[in-house]
Image (tube, one colour):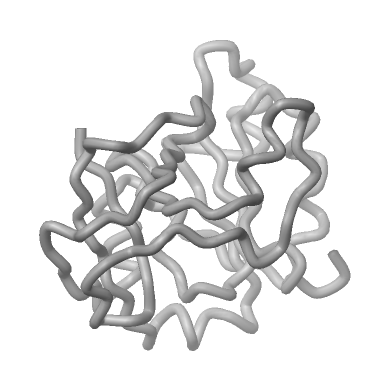
Length: 174
């Protein structure tokens, strides 16, 4: 299993656990997820982080239980799709981010869209620049969909697809 951390900083020698910047409501017993942690994403889900850090986005993909109707309505022919606002397209096309390879030891799965956490500091194994984010998304099998607003996509959470929204607080009207 490969784990990654994505950053706009090319010089991180060691990841220290830190609390999340914007705490979320957590179920009882999971409040610790707002505390000091090192976050990582597994390789199959890395496409969720192939964006400038603050870029709001919604990624969707089918599950085993996804209906043909939902697939047709939200995905069309795409296997996975990433929606971004048009106002973020220039940043997406010019950003450079860095993919840090992390050791799997010490991480625990959250059983949630490929997210893993470590409660202890982590030294990366390697770092690689990702300079063409749209091409990296395509290489992951993700269709990039540019829309004026993400708000019409709110209904995807009521569908039978998996939907992940990241940095939605930065989306217009969200």
